[in-house]
Image (cartoon, rainbow, N blue to C red; front, side):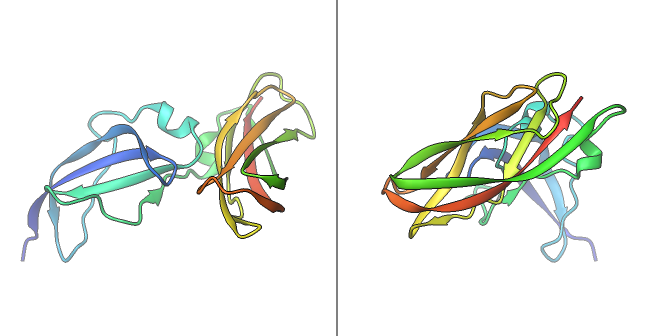
Length: 172
């Protein structure tokens, strides 16, 4: 028995609060059978590489005129899918320390410098520092030597404590 045609829309959002980054091509009328559907996002209109250059991008799905489904799913990549001939990958864990603050930054230095600024992905921030939820908000000052991760409290409250986050750099 065939499924039912449903109108699906996909959105890429930065961070869990969900600032809209862009509408993802590939939606439209889609056959849904028992809640299962198959869509090749970017199959007709290619996805912008900009989607994958930002940390913490989540995919939102809407059916018809309904509200966006929750929870959103984070868009991630397999490291080998991101590399091309000659690229190298360096991974690590960085330490964050917060002392009676609601935001801060952490500098990361690569063990071996890249010849130019690599692509950076970061995630896995322990969301509980001193009883407050913290998130990474951006990666900045990327050079061949390292980068800076900026983080903040979700509620704006101050806290004291520490956490770690994982990062990966891909470049030459």
